[in-house]
Length: 74
Image 1 (cartoon, one colour):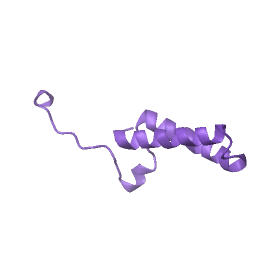
Image 2 (spheres, helix red, strand yellow):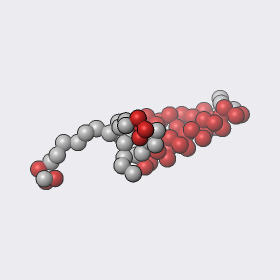
Image 3 (cartoon, helix red, strand yellow):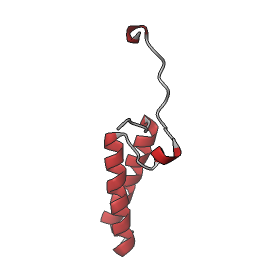
Image 4 (spheres, one colour):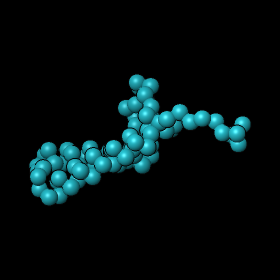
């Protein structure tokens, strides 16, 4: 698959995932809500690691910046 996530998108997802996990571990979020947020955290971490968000494909979205061609790429 072609990557469609930029660096800032990946960092934001990882930060949100870490926040959800911390809130669950210290007991602020409990029960079903906590488990759902842990599930979302797992999805965020996985999509960040592979730099692909499947939900972006149907909409033709990409947060990856357009790179400029370098002389060595020609």
